[in-house]
Length: 324
Image (cartoon, rainbow, N blue to C red; front, side, top):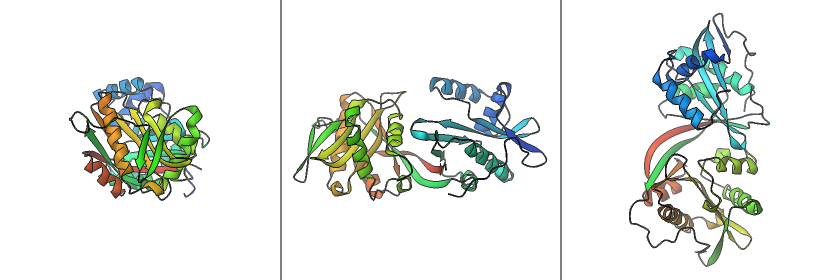
């Protein structure tokens, strides 16, 4: 990644503009610009966002703005998360003239992150937001993937013969043992996840970017972690697969956090068996559905999910920046 050299904090970007973190009394105006692109602090959307941030315990300490005099004209919010990963939100780019200003502001935000605390910064964009993608690329981001968001209802009467997450699975004459998450089994999960990354088609540009402990911490932070929904599968001492499910926080549904197979166990219908068990588990828990996100270019996975009744609910472009 190219070295990022932003202007110094508070240094004017040109004769009219400068950037800084807002004072408490300016916060609503900056949030209005972040959410809508306009300095209209009385908008109801601000109250909705602030309530959401409070409920989710999201800090607003990472709020920054570019000012024209005392008026915020562009803003961003960076929220650190588990596993040394942060999420960046930026204002809508309502005009191409804002590109240089937005680029410099984002560069400044990135330069003010501690690599010891944040290793990876990610942004999710609507696919049609090409101007925002251009800005992020100029600021040091690269495209990770075009993501397809999918959901399957678990209310139908299908798969009643499935018993949920079984202790053993037969895979072409080999018996795979299910290992449930515990601190004692952490290395089994680390080994299964790392093996599944070999020649993966699922966001391959992420491989090698983060330490395995940061990856596990990030997966645990999705939704609500429950140890008995995390499974690693081994054939004797050989890692075969890993299936990580987390309940959503706000409704009775599950999220497929990660499904990965070691190369030797691919194309053997093992992924299908594991997903059938995941669906049966959701039904047994009285969850109403399962959500997931998949790399559009991972055609075997997309075909698998469609074949199991998952339907697309949205699309996003994922952008990442690795801090050095």
